[in-house]
Amino acid sequence: MGLPRIVAGCDVGSTTGKALLMRGDEILGFSVIPCAVRPELTAEQALELAMREAGVSSREEIAYVVGTGYGRVRIPFADENVSEITCHGLGAFFLKPGERTLIDIGGQDCKVIRVNSQGRVVDFAMNDKCAAGTGRFFEAMARVLEVSLEELTMLSLRSGNPAQITSQCSVFAESEVITLLNEGVGLEDIAAGINEAIASRLAVLVRKVGLEGRASVSGGCAKNRGLILSLERRLDVELEELGMDPQVIGALGAAVIAGRKAGSADTGGG
Image (cartoon, rainbow, N blue to C red):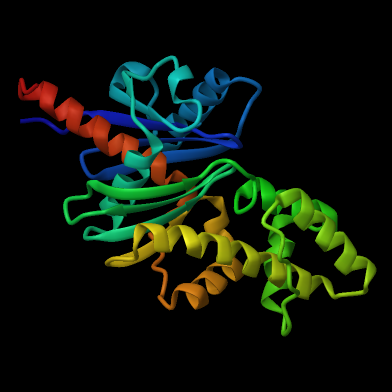
């Protein structure tokens, strides 16, 4: 019996495109790129880059592709598409098996997903009605403070007195930040206040779903150490790192599903 066939997952979100190639349980390579003008182009570019990373020269070597994310129905080479809820939950489970709560902070929405001991989603909650608590919110705040996202993170870690930001609306929160700047509040305290405000909103979602087993964070905002620390304080838990780039967890879950489909085809299963 030969090696398992190569499969791929492609996650086209609102701000980034991700692709990941696997053979069996081995991750061969992945990519994360800014979104292009159209989801189709984002998917094509992400897959090509992941293929180069994996040393795969032809798409004919890829047996099955599962698409997920905001633009999943527009991925031209996907054999099927699966919801990002399922893919994120399964991706986290693949890296850290067992019951788990996953907090996914995407570019335009945030989700809390709870999976059981088999990696199946048993409950979830999503905030997709407002930018507050998403990557776009952090980008907007960084622009107001005239710093990069990386600087925003580092500033927050130096704060000793986080500012109070109370608005639940991202537009009004931006006005609050401008007022704080005009009042002479330090950048580090404003940055920490932004993290505290978002952590508070995310904690509400987590409590709706219930915190069971271990907890992790995926999405680009998982790289914001200040936000992670604020979340840990709010939830009174230690958030586990998943062990790879948190932005590709959805693409990983999609690739795991693709591997199952390819394996089923090899054995003649349905």
